[in-house]
Amino acid sequence: METYKNPQSSILERVDDLLLRMTIEEKIGQLTQVPAGTENTEEVDCLIKAGRVGSRILAFTAHAGSEEQLIVDITESNEAQRIAVEESRLGYL
Image (cartoon, rainbow, N blue to C red; front, side):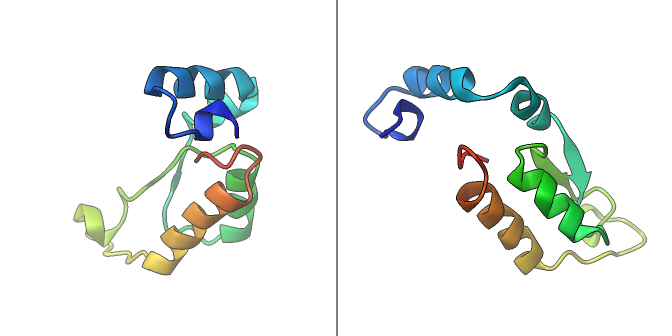
């Protein structure tokens, strides 16, 4: 088992191991945010799988009090998380 996945390892050891394994593109990807509820979900899913998305923004949704009242379906968020964990190279997002 990789150190970053080992719950018996210290957090510092896990973080160090994960950072050593990540490519520069994956590190930059963790700084990248995409709006939730976008129409291009297939493209976003591919970016998540490739480690190019670190989080999703709810700023333009009803969850953030937007006047547009865009509702993000929780299944969309759950699917994004599943892709990050089960389909990305390191399974860490």
